[in-house]
Amino acid sequence: MKFFLLYPLFFIISLNSFASTYYVAPSASGGDNNNPGSISSPWETITYALTQLSAGDTLYLREGTYRETVTITQVSLYNILGTKVMDTTLDNTTNTQTISTNGFSTGIYIIKLESGANQLTKKVIIK
Image 1 (cartoon, one colour):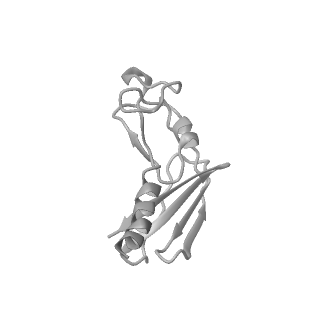
Image 2 (cartoon, rainbow, N blue to C red; image 1 turned 90 degrees about the vertical axis):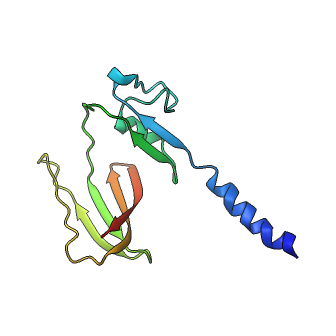
């Protein structure tokens, strides 16, 4: 009986093992989009890195100056139950965008950033 109870646990653990960790660094720090994205051979641009990620992957930005434009066109925020609580189209004619969390309860939310056909979804904690 214990064998059958542990089997689903092993399956869940194995699903999490497919997530990968990647790194980006400016070219002056060894970044190159032909690299594999590892800590010792990071990618060069954030834009390229976003096209390489899969659900569950983690991307770290190494210290440095990134000279590129990342255009985010749509921001959606979902509560922990999956209900969309905010949906904003950004005005990309200005250099700075502000998204207010006034009126939201403290807790865990999911934010989805869209840029053309690319999407990035992350957990956000509002305190």
